[in-house]
Image (cartoon, rainbow, N blue to C red; front, top):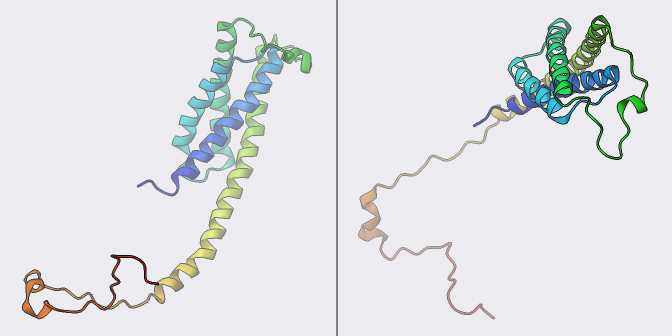
Length: 194
């Protein structure tokens, strides 16, 4: 049976991956002036989902989240750069404007400028995730504090059940039980009574 914490861990790691990929993907696309291919975004999300699942065993502080976000931004930058290079400059789907047409791209000829944008994305994402992390754990502590007295009260006022009656196997064929009338039975054969 799975632990009740597992769905929460999976949701937290999915949020980590979505925020990291979303902020980085939008920033990278705006900086380069081209879109990032879907397989590159999907691969980045799956990779960060796996890492996020491994690190969500307990509440994390801002510094830890920031360290993981910086690592994630580095990996995503390399992945997005590779994905854009392998597809050439990816053209947007038919009918959609290119990123360069929807927003003015930042000239990213300098690797330091791209690095600065990824660090900024990591700082923003880490702050955003830390706020959510704090809210989730505060809510969990409040629910636990409210539920604990109720559970203890239920445990204290547990109903007393009657003792089980055990009938030895050989006694069911005893002559004393032959002809015993079953009081709580209802015949179900024949037409219904009128």
